[in-house]
Length: 314
Image (cartoon, rainbow, N blue to C red; front, side, top):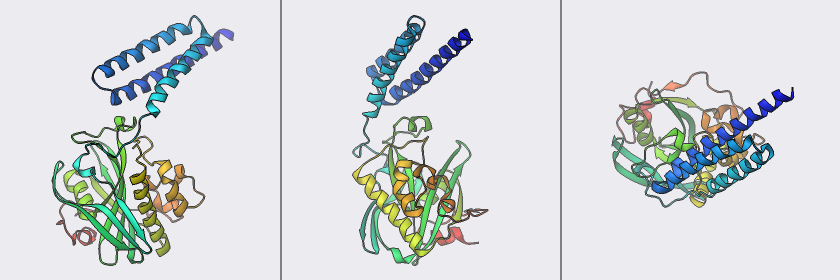
């Protein structure tokens, strides 16, 4: 029995060292460069081997040394800070801003591009003022790609003048920096709230990225639509004041969903709200629609003011 327990303790120790080493190598790979990268990788591997060797000589001490090593790498990793002043890719160069004045909200940096390719677009960024009392619809839109497999959820607000504005939480890449899911798990990207016209963001997803778009109307009372829009406006203000990291593993962003879940579903923990994973109706106590409409015309409808009506035409 004692021999079995000793063996199991060795296995546990090995698994902990392996997990910590792989995590440390990932953090170093995505944040260090040139000579520092080489030194960091080899130092981590050497430390892991030394700790494993120590395990068979002084078992109690091996746990202490492991804890110190993990503490050092974790301390360095947690010292990394999100920034607003990098050389950003053009499509995420500006995050949404918001100025709230009673029933009127002025959104700054609303993206309104006419896309030619994944790296080229005309148009620019606009300031748009909306009346909260004129919100007539809320739609949950999901963009899905088959290769590589990915899903992006967005929320679109429709207004009485047929204008539609979309909010989307996305990773903020630097110029000429491709997106990588694994890198997104290691604080490689900042978090950005994109506000855009539908003819920008939906057409880009459908025509340029070849995503399939699904639209599910969310039946909300006027006060809930207002509260939801204000929650996004508040999130825009929060990210402008306090930048945050994007995390591809915890893409729902529980810390950032706190204000939203409190407004929309009091008593629902932020990490269970599921707003960004497509469960908005359930969070609000509404039944989720059984089927979502496929926006088949999203890639071909002409960009411009009539775009939103065209993609919703039966």
